[in-house]
Length: 253
Length: 201
Image 1 (cartoon, one colour):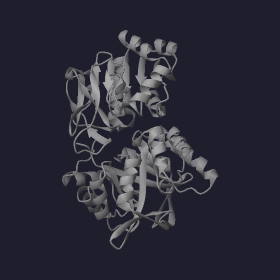
Image 2 (cartoon, chains in turn brown, blue; image 1 turned 45 degrees about the vertical axis):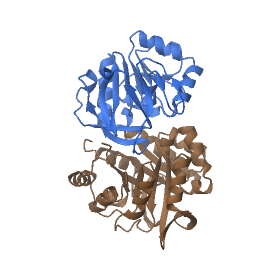
Image 3 (cartoon, one colour; image 1 turned 90 degrees about the vertical axis):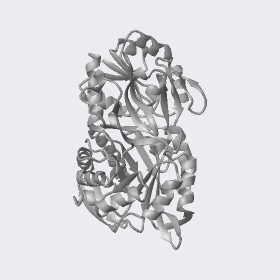
Image 4 (cartoon, chains in turn cyan, orange; image 1 turned 180 degrees about the horizontal axis):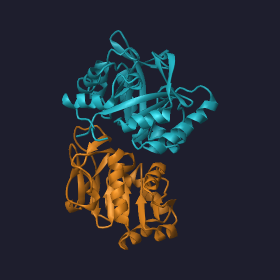
């Protein structure tokens, strides 16, 4: 049986990990390479580095961080943030990343998904989508949750798969940073509709939230940041809890 | 010295590093002389079967690999590199592989999420030096949409289960294939590579 994955996400600015709440009030945490090693040794199944760097100078530092991370861990990791072209894909993949996630750039130019999938394979193209509920619908937002694209979340997920995405990260803006649980409903709708893995993101506050989204939400993996960074949840404890509640997880790390 | 064959298929830095970390003398090359001189060959690979075979042909490496394999040199195919060791793939068409081992590469069927992506269990098929120190049910990291249909089940060292049982590790004497990424499979991956290192001595 394929194990459900637990994925810590590290927001990185240059060479520092930070964590924002609802994309605001950014707070500094730790050295990304050290944190990646720690998570890898303590049972993370995969990591995501989200590049929130604004300046070009820091972007070079970030690539350096990707290289150092690849040298230090032997679990897969993905890079997201600021990826706009096939060249950007090449840069981070060459630095040692296994997957690349695209968000706003894919909305603006959906062909990017296909171009990257043809060049590097679908397995490394992750479509990341920020979604928010408006009445009965879930809409796709871009630019850090500031702009409603008018795209419906399910339509975009299905289209993304058709264009060649190999995986979807579904980030719920409503629940992000709130620690009240993942958005189960939309996760389940999308996970049941697409035939590629879906990673739920946004809202983890306790172990039960992970169980809910992996069981009821049908997610293939659950991503979280602050609960891990601040030591509120230990991955080993979380996995033991999930296993005891009937979720297949990798426990030999 | 071992050679990782460099034929423009995906990032091989991580494979390189994994072997280097085991204290092995590794080179990355598409040079036939280097391959001939090396004590073992690693055939990595990410991407499409057809493109990978075309690249092997472009670098004129098909016969070189076959000759080295026939001479008894250990050869390890990883992920797509494992699939290339077989006779034929049905990935978007019908393509001939290296044919060092017997079997076809076919698409997963049934109600499954594709690619088969993530950590899955190794299920022991037979005793082999490759499985030293590996307990039943240890996890390794897979990423693939096609799988091997082996002609000789005797070649299978480990299965994994995804919809049905599929080969995870195959071996016939000096020819070894791993469908998953040992270089991305944590401690279990390192143990497997260490077993290969022992075999190469």
